Image: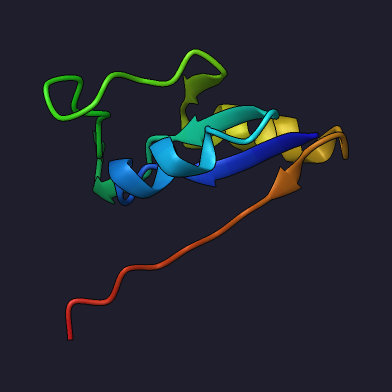
Length: 76
């Protein structure tokens, strides 16, 4: 299975990546022209995951070969 998700919470993404699937991790735009980057010093990117930009993610979703897993962390 191919899963596209977002870099909102690296520990969660790392736990998901324990599953035997391929992951694309979108580095989302948090301000104009500014992406939320994967923080290697917190956790290394899992070997079955690859970072992509929002534009690359759109192209992947158009291929219909990926499942989109969205999660939102609320700070309220």
